[in-house]
Length: 120
Image (cartoon, rainbow, N blue to C red):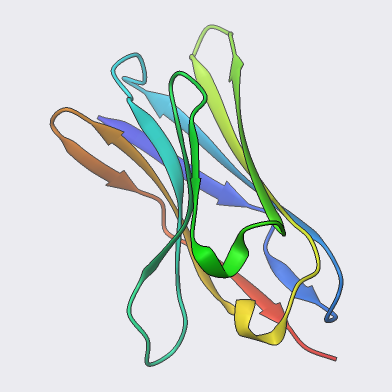
């Protein structure tokens, strides 16, 4: 089992920045990749960004050049792993609930989501 806890969402003005973090704990040694999806009201969930264990990244077309995903391995007694998403030049269309996920051979694990609202 893997547990994911997101943080960092909130309200920001257009053109501003936010940083989302996702802490994974539990059986993280078999995680192959981590990333973020988002879902806006009335729309399907879409990929924002992902990063593999080896550091390969992938971005949705709408966020390329504005968002950056990173993955930090923090070693401690409970094996905490962080995935962070730096979001710059935010637009109103970035408003959505952002979900962190972790992919293992036995399937995907999801966080509960964090709201990002971009508005003046």
